[in-house]
Length: 182
Image 1 (cartoon, rainbow, N blue to C red):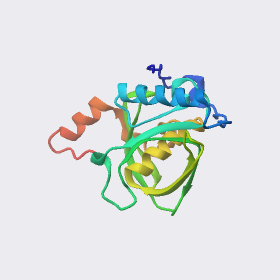
Image 2 (tube, rainbow, N blue to C red):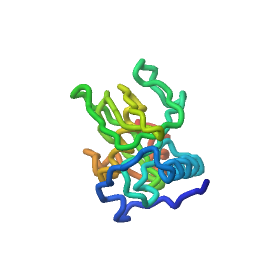
Image 3 (tube, rainbow, N blue to C red):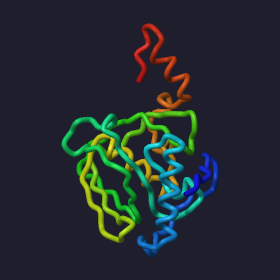
Image 4 (cartoon, rainbow, N blue to C red):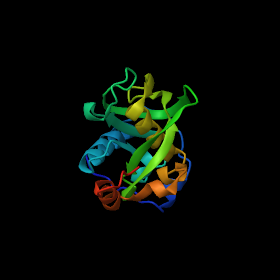
């Protein structure tokens, strides 16, 4: 396995629509996915989309640790998962804002409105369909990574840029006496 170079904000591959994967069970896709998990682990990430490692294909990897779930029945922890040629469908009209960061936008964070509940479907490395209905952090991660496949970075989804900044500055603002933070 190999750690891959992560594309940073401004790189053209991050702003392009990714192409569908022709054969989810192909050996080169399995190698790419293994390298993506190693890269995600090395960067202490929760998810990673193929365009972030300079591969314009419709696939991403993710995991949801027990520490990140909200406790809702449809926000379960999720081990290492790959979604190939994913489709995301909102299950209601409600959106919630989540603080998000991104390996391609290092050192920054912002509050991003996302669908509260979604259904995702795609394929695993074995070519079998994966379908789940999720909410909370699980839904947020899947929507964030799927956006990369459509050439979108989380700041493009933000509706209030006052809730966008450097991690260090946002931490200071929240910790300051008399300051509530967002």
